[in-house]
Length: 169
Image 1: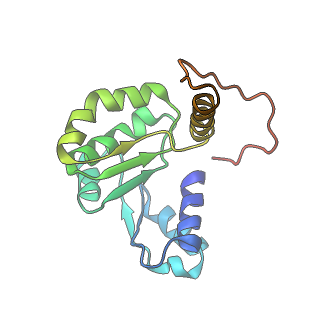
Image 2: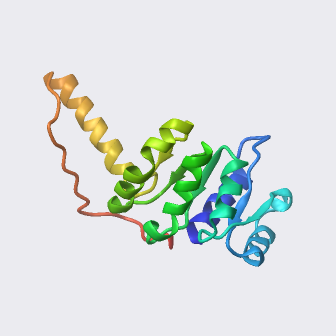
């Protein structure tokens, strides 16, 4: 998808030297097309055909990597919960960009204990839905503590006006 493509473009152009990574998706033809559209250095990036409906493929992927960055969602409950399951079982770290609270709750309820026992870190909400408000809340709470010597019981955030537009992802 759109956001996964952006991540691949970033890793190809700005990833640290020696980074070992692969692109995964349900269509090998689409993965090959994407790799051809990326800079030439992407030619050696491995491609993994992985369908989220295949527990076997997910388990195989999770067993041979340290971290899965998952951009396939909407809804994440359908497409990402099986990926979380495979990562939790294999002890593979999992990161996504979801803002879907119901998915995060389902993930935690179903796989938190298993992830703890295998050492897998399951990290949701690493996208626009979450990061600006989380950082803003942290900065506000720190400023409140520093300036007034008290913590915050609750912080509400609002987006009233923005410049820019939807990126397509």
